Length: 124
Image (cartoon, rainbow, N blue to C red; front, side, top):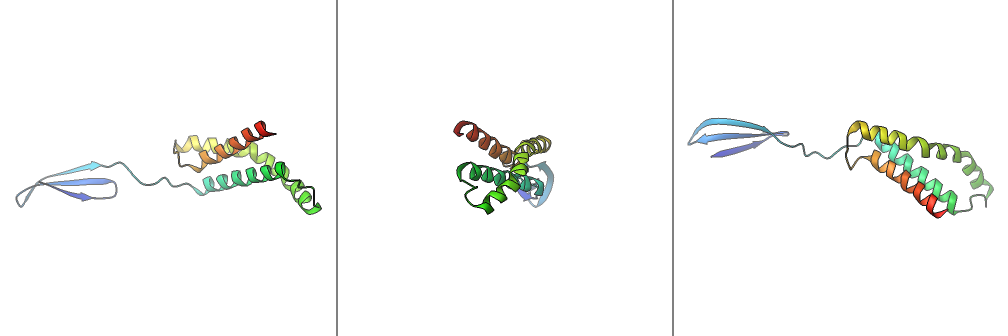
């Protein structure tokens, strides 16, 4: 008869014969914890979303219709353009360093920038 005692990362089985324990078997279980993204990954992900949103707003709306929106757009266009170069490089380096996890925000940040670039090349 087997009695299972589950721990976090190990499975312990006691082999019983009547009232006596005749053996104990400890096996490692697969770690089933959900992948946790770091704060840097979240920051890179949010930066890619903001950069893509500003890019699409600047391409689809006349930001120079009002002086204030034109001035704001003129102040942020260079950092947004730089983020389109820097964010994918950082995201790919970190994604490669941490290993392949499909729920990684680094992968999603890279895909957001890549899709934005592809839509820009096709549409404009």
